[in-house]
Structure formats: C-alpha cells, structure tokens
Length: 310
Length: 310
Image (cartoon, rainbow over all chains, first blue to last red; front, side, top):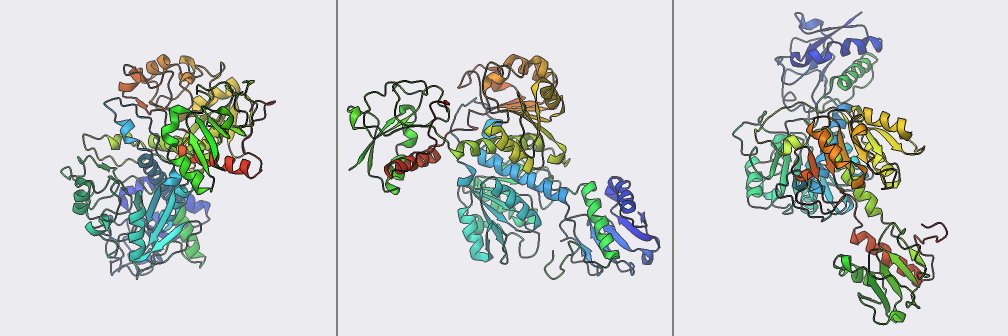
C-alpha cells in the first residue's frame, strides 16, 4: 500500500517537489507526497517546517513521525499536540555549510582580514598574525554541528576548547562542561563560537557577567541562535572596548530590523542567517532514509528528546 | 663554558632578541647571543640570513655550524668560504601560515564575506552560497606549500585541480600539467591560487591570454610571487568585468608603492606579504634545537647537501 506523506512546509515545496518523489522511488518506497491533507487520519508522515501554518497535530492519528526540515526545534518542541516521534534535520549539507561559515569567519578574525579588505589609508603593515596553533577557539555546543566545526578547526591547528552543559567526550577535542568549564573556556578563548540549541538553560548564556570573562580582544562568532547572547550586554561590552568583535548570523528577530544597532556598529558583522541552510538535495535524502527506517522498524535518526528539548 | 652565538641577520634581530635567549635558557644552554663578532675565532655558531652583510666565513675558525633563517640557500650554497656545516630553515610555521592564509581567503571569496563586512545599505539577503563541494579551486603550483593548501581545501570539500608545469602525482588530488592542463584548470576554476616559484617559465604565467580563459566571476588569490601575474593585464581584466576579484599578497615591488592602482581598485585586496613568513617563535625553536643537538654530538637537522645544492 502506498504511504501518504504530507509535505507541510509550503514555502519550500518548490525545492522538494521533484527531488523528494524521485528519491522515494529510488529507495523503493511507494508513496504519494501531498501538500494538503483533507483527511489527516490518512497521513503516514509529516514533513514540517516550524514556520509552517500547521500547528495542531491532534488529527494526525496515524502519523508515525514528524520530520522537521529545521535543525532547531525550539518552536515546536513545546507544542503539546505534537505527540508523534519528532525528528530534527541533520543534513550533511547543513553541516558542511556550517563548517565552511565557521571556519571561514574564524580564519577571517584570526588573520585580521578586515583591515586588508577595508584599508582606505593604504597601510602596508607586514606584521604577521600568530599561527592558528597559538589561538584558542572555544566551541560552545558540542552537538553534531559544533563537533564538526571543532574538528575542522583542530585540523587547521587551532587549540579547541569544546564546551557543553553536561560532560561529553569527543575524541581529539579538549572538552569542558558546566559553569566552571564555561568560565575557563571564556577566559582562555581568542575566538568564541556559539553553536548551542536554544533552550531555557542556554537563553542569554552570554550575559554581561560571562561576557566579562572574555579577553578584551576576543571575538564572538554566533551561527547558533540569537537568543544565546544578551544583545544589550554584548553592545555594552563592545562599546566599552571589553570585547573585540562579534560576527552574528542569527538574531532574536529576523530579518534583523533596519534600526537595530548591530547594523551600524563598527565591531559587529551581520550575516543574514546563511551559515547553515537546509539544502533540498541533502535534506531530501535524510527524509527518505528516515521513512525507510521507520517502515523497516529501525530506529529513527535525529529523534528529538522532549525532556531535553532538542 | 658559555657558547658564543653570532646573530648575523641584523634586519630581524628585533624579532629574536627576546625569544632566542629565553629559549636557550629554557633548553639549559649557557650562551651569549651577540650581533657583532670582533673576534670571529671565538664564535661557536652563526645564525644567518643570505641578505646579511656577512659574506666571508673564513675567519670563523671555531664555528660548528651556520644556521640559516631562510628555507632557500641558493644564494649561499656557492660561497666557497662557507665550509662549516650549513643548515637551512625548515619551519612548519611557514607552511601552516600559508595554509591558514590560503584557506581563509578562499573561504572568504567562497562565502562572499566582503558584502557582509562592508554593507552600508544594511541589506539582508539570505541567499546561501553554494557548498564548497560545488566550487572548483585551481592550485597552480603543487610543491610543498601548494600541496599542503590543496589538501586543506580538499578536506573542506572543495574540488581541487592541482596544476604543475610537469606531470605530478599527488594522492587524493586531481593533478593536471602542461599548457593544456593550465587551460583546463583556468577554464573550470572558481578560485585560482598561484603558488609557484618565480622562474623564467612562470614569469607572467597569468597574462592577458590566460586570464581570458577564466570565468567572469572567478577570483585570483596570489600568495606566491608578484611576477606570476601580468599586473596590467590583470587590471584590464578586472576593469572589463572579465574577472571577479584578485587578492594579492606579493608584488613586483614591496612595499606596494603608494600610487599603485591595486591599492584603490574595488576588485583588488592587498595583503602586505603576510601569507607565509618565518615566524621568530617557530624558527627560534629550530635554531635552539640544532644548537642543542650539535652540543650533544647528535646529527643536525636540515643539513644542506653541498653536492645537491639544497
């Protein structure tokens, strides 16, 4: 019998309408992909984006899994009607894009590129930057994305301090955890990358007190979540010269409002939420593989733990 | 008894005056580092740069080794007065610095960072760049430095086309050679990195004709030698919109003269010959380790074979 897959993310249907049915066929899965579900009780799987109109999952009584297209699930994990197994997107394209953005901006700050890219005085100052092996990068968040970025930076000889809320062991990476570990990481780091999920525990993780632990020339690179940083405290630290720079890809409100002080602050670089985008080709493979697993009675990949919130 | 170490490279003494004595002490070597040698027969070791005034090594009758600060010894290997053991500098820092600069600027162009670093209109355009796996980087020059850069970029998933004048096999890298190979590499590349030595064959390698093979949006990244590129042809191609950008670290005349059009060209980024420098910290460790070895009767590292000339 053919499966009914409800694609409930209309904004990106264009990107998936060809590739998804093709990959299902390739995987030998008989399925119909629909963008409307007049009979919710007939739906086997829901493909979902947290920004989509669908909010009440109650009528989807047969649904075996809700497969999100987003890595972050904080906007749906609190939805009490969503009782089906929920998977977040972990797609190699997303990881690759994130690694490229994080390594790129880490190297940019490490090399001091900005003063060459914008050099109206035509200053020739042949002072070499230190080597990466002399720089400490704190990776706040050692999930799939943080670990991939940490490994890529370690391969370029950066000294990595991985940090997570609870103890983690990642081969080849010096890992710290808990409050004391956070203080140690922030005090030592030249560059701090924030790649944590948004949870009640991580909101405003970098507040005025913790920003105060950082070195005066240190740089924050945030491709994680806007809410990880207290915006006002960050601006105050930058204004006071207590922090070198912040390169931010994510914001509490997106697009970043035109009057937000980040736009014109000389020590802030805004990138428009491009660090990790779900690319349809890679994501469609992950969706199909999860459906294949569910149908074969195997464990789902990237299943969200509701208690932890990610 | 304390050793007498003659530091005969006055131009860079500032960089070594603190670190070198400190590392000698750390290694337990009693030594005095001097910048003048009124009694050449009292000198135990000479630290040397081929550009230094010292040319006659005859009076240094007790000298156990001449330790060059340069990787290349072509300017001293023919000096008949230099009969002492001669070591060239092999400092991993030089390769590391080059890899960091090349990977950093490749990622900068790949990610289109400049339009975020300089964004006076506060434009929020969340168009994602392609993934590195969709970009072709041509590495012109597959010596030690080019190969190290190619491997680092390949590890980030860039498609690498290595090119050298004569055929080379480098594991894991698609290598081309000769004129036909150069044309193929330039026609396909999104980013072209030039890391060739300056020889009569490589001078003006990128001339008007070959620049014309490149894609209109392609970028040149040159940390090799200024003479590899025909400056006038490059400027003409950039002005005509036939090329996207050039990021240049090396020039025919350095410092780049204040009136050179590269300085103010909107499609040129000048970096002040910082891609690969012998860093005093790393080099000083190599010097001290060689002195320690010589004093302990062990083999010197990086000893030049006079017959082979390197």
